[in-house]
Amino acid sequence: MLAIRLPEEIEHRLAELAAKTGRTKTYYVREAILEHLDELEEKYLAVDRLEKSGKRWTLDQIESIQKTETHATTKHN
Image 1 (cartoon, rainbow, N blue to C red):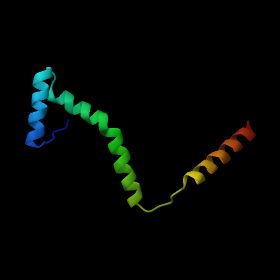
Image 2 (spheres, one colour):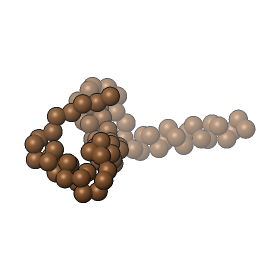
Image 3 (tube, rainbow, N blue to C red):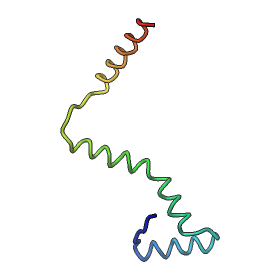
Image 4 (tube, rainbow, N blue to C red):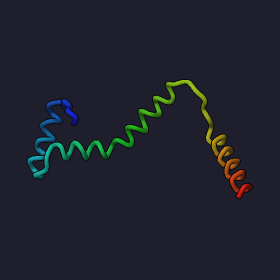
């Protein structure tokens, strides 16, 4: 269960949309969250990773590691 407070203008727009379409406000809030959750996770988790210290790799380093692992796996099969 989730309860949120919205600015009055947004609450009004949401209520009008629900009334005009016959769907619930919950339906539209759920749709908005599902539509944007991936991009929010990507944005805020990226910021979180940048703010924390720790090992960082370049794309070239990651690709080199992947090639090495693939080559090692191929040799053993």
